[in-house]
Length: 400
Image (cartoon, rainbow, N blue to C red; front, side):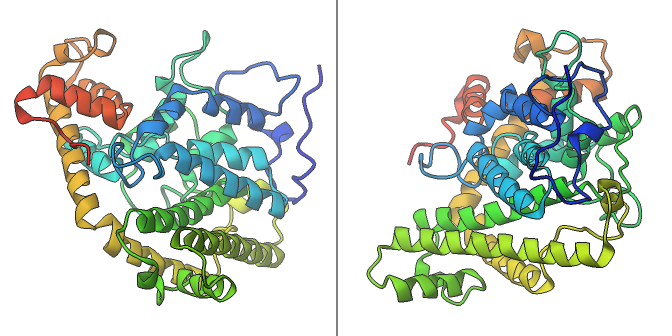
């Protein structure tokens, strides 16, 4: 059977082409109905790690309420934005969507607080990084297929997951230490860590920024952490709220916020499309490889938008992420993760049988196995495990 052709919407000369994929680590026959990038997307959606995102913290802990975003709903929103922007730019929508859906697979329970706790526990054995953990999940920890561990994604999907925020080594990187899991994997599968990712992965990165900024504004108002009047003088969102109020002066606050957010998402995507188009016109890349070889991202916000986004992000840090209610839950979540890590490492028999390491295994490998187990937990499973192993400490996260 013939291989499915690229999507008709992938018209930009620098778009990634599924028929030109660099392939998979383990060769597989092509699908008769899907491109390689569509297959990547579908495998991610069917992964157990993707399902577990439903009960992992985005900002609010699992028991705060049913109306707030979780890692799963956030990932779906990122995927929708990435696909829309990719379509407008003539890029491969399926690859953009696959990278967007996979970008948070490696997050442990309790969001960044849980990640910080695991990183501290693993400091002597390579640390913990959620992006590197996502790579471990799709190349090793998912165990579904007879011929290989992981999901055997295409090179382009793996590269996009690892580098969607930019190069990891070299002059264009942020010069942070290379996460151990990525360094280990790169020894056997070259993902070209010194270059930028392909254009679809760059789209996914800015779709992530666009999604979380806007849905965190919405969730922050819904949770009562700040009100509409507090946003009046905040860049981007303030003018949007004023425009909505002029059109609908009697609209209730929830609908007013939604109308402002949808306008803000549209403006941010429009800015990405315009800036990317301008950069493409100046550089004229003729392939995805040309995009990777550039000395700056092709896909970007304009300088003016980037400055306003930075200010808006600062507002969210001060009024949401560092709010006493959010910080209290984050601290409790970090305690749960830190306690579990120390207990499992000291007492491997406390782990489920299938996760118990070989007693002869070196400590770094045992520690990494423990980190893998904890990182895969949902918030509520982590709390249940903590109550089982530390019953004298009382219940964490009492329902409010």
